Image 1 (cartoon, rainbow, N blue to C red):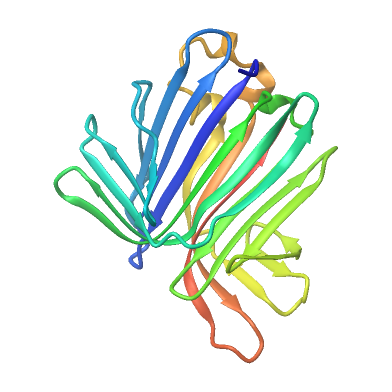
Image 2: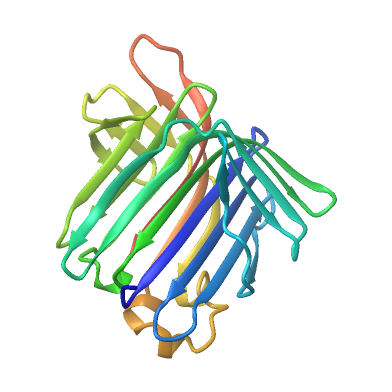
Length: 262
């Protein structure tokens, strides 16, 4: 077992109405007993996003026979991602100190999420799994942009690292492509003619990780250095349009974020 071992699942669902639900499920083994972490973020158009957190051990998403499922008895939540498509896998960073493995389990999937008795989300969803074997504050990175855009015909996912180590991973409908521009409001592929525009209309979460995503963890200052707690995140839900010459506009929803190290 490596000194640091983080297994982190991310899964989401966006609806045509402009609603969204995001699941984070993680297990960290480092400096003592395993830490289990679950975060469920729900957003209804025009309302503030709501988050619930738990350090109780809950099962991670389960991949089985062409679908991915997740269930929380504690929160009365059931979720399913059907026909996830062909997975995309890359080792985004590798060094003697450790590595980061990215497994895009479901680039585009028909998703359904029930939260309690009355809240239902149906639309397109995305699922990925990260495995990190070195502390994230030791990654040679200053800025990260990540996002995914999905509809019935297109799936675009992008990862852009900047810093001492630069790395880009962009996939359109399962094929690796190169992006000329990756910004908060525009993704422009290297052909200069394929452009995704993002309206950044809804902020899902914003602030330092120590005050937002990680605030529920006990003894934060003992577990993580200040550099990690002061990492700033801004996550959006955007209506997006993918435009290509000679083809009709491809309209869908995107979830995307920028993360900046101090």
